[in-house]
Length: 69
Image (cartoon, rainbow, N blue to C red; front, side, top):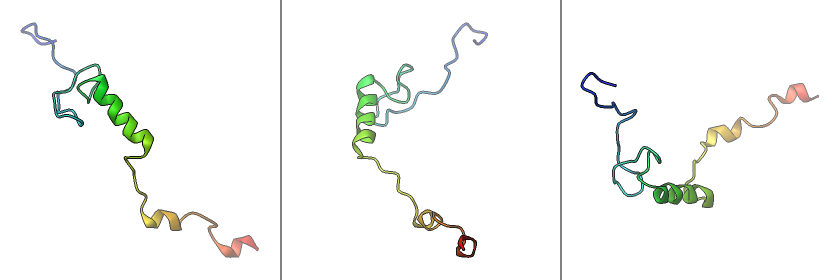
């Protein structure tokens, strides 16, 4: 709390990632429960994908063929 009696916000408001309205404290970083649920639905249905790099796939498997025998 500041000296002038106003409450200092915990985090700055930012635009909702779904509709660009100001975010709400209850549903941060979204502006409403609706926008929060829309985003969750996109993750659950696979609309958002985090792709792995091709280098990561090569590292999986036996470390060395000499150790196997």
